[in-house]
Image (cartoon, rainbow, N blue to C red; front, side, top):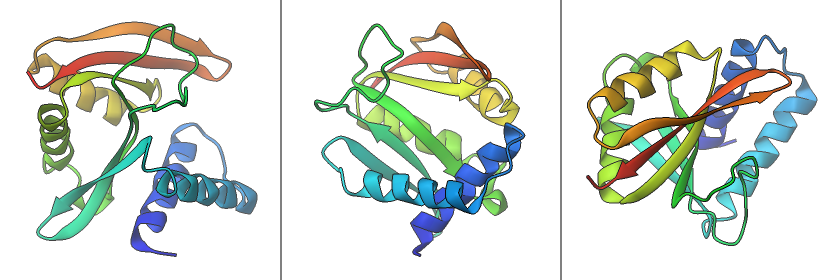
Length: 159
């Protein structure tokens, strides 16, 4: 396993903990299969590393969709969809994620969508704080699923 796949697995396990799910060995294999799928489809998926002093401290995974509708719950299309964001615990609370997201939005202009689990308070706080100071951002809909709520936001990059 490489550093990126280990980070991705840690990220998925952390999400399970937020949702009160105990991942099994089968889940971990599924998460790694998902990671390998991501790495094999650069035409629609981009792994954006978050760097700190030359070390990869986390990632942002975005999709430009291509011909694949990865987020079928939406009635509209975005230029990009932020699929996953993660920063290793040792690098948290240093502003790295916010700085990386701002850089991403400025470097890749367009309309972005994402969803955040309602139980993931640190992520919700990050996005809401970022968007208080970023123009043209708004909450666009509140999706409900069998497990609870997911927030969806839209932001226009390159502002």
